[in-house]
Amino acid sequence: MTYSTKTMTPNPRANPHQIALNIHHLNCYYGRKCAVEGVSMEIYPNQVTAIIGPSGCGKSTFLKSLNRISELDSDAVYEGNVEFFGQNIFDSQVNLNRLRKQIGMVFQKPNPFPMSIYDNVAYGVKLFYQVSRSRLDAIVENSLRGAALWDEVKDNLHKSALSLSGGQQQRLCIARALAVKPKILLMDEPCSALDPIATMKIEQLIHKLRDEFTIVIVTHNMQQASRVSDYTAFFSTDESRVGYLVEYDRTEKIFSNPSDHQTHDYISGRVG
Image 1 (spheres, rainbow, N blue to C red):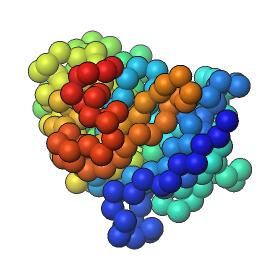
Image 2 (cartoon, rainbow, N blue to C red):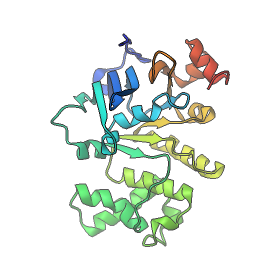
Image 3 (cartoon, one colour):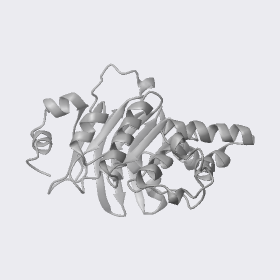
């Protein structure tokens, strides 16, 4: 069964050319199993958009569809359109490596490569650009500074990245993503495996990065969503539908005066 879902547009006056991701009736399947159904929404440049909802509602699947990274390890199939600054990412002519360079990803569990701190950050740069060693050094430093990690590792750049703490590893993964100059940064529960101090540093970093990047973050933490995001999308699932968008609006409204009773019940802790 299909459902008609109108586009949820918190900012109806937004210029179409100023929409980072324009999602139209997106369905995501793993084989024949539908995980996300009929999602339509707009994600705006230099804003932080939080994706919230109960476990199993398709949040991470939706996030991974935005740069098609779920295709790497599953039989993912999509229907609908996702326009990245006007270009449909599902077009057959899209270069997936270039797409994932422009729409970077930070995962729930830090995943540094088993190589030095320096080489982790430099890896993508070497893959996509031809730069001098001095220029590469500058990119590595600027990326680590951008991830608020430089002062902690500048004297140990050639040590294994695996020697870093969990919070440092996550910021290294952010630096690795920043080094290739993405336009959008996707973050899939980036603090779920971190302690409160490391979580605070990541949240502070998100506030800083919004000036340069568009950020979409999946989080189970309601307080975190309210602290770091400008917009919030609430996803849910029930007996008749899976992975659907219930409500999408400015974060302040979602948390203070949601329009849908499902959102209110979830935010207030009555369900989920």
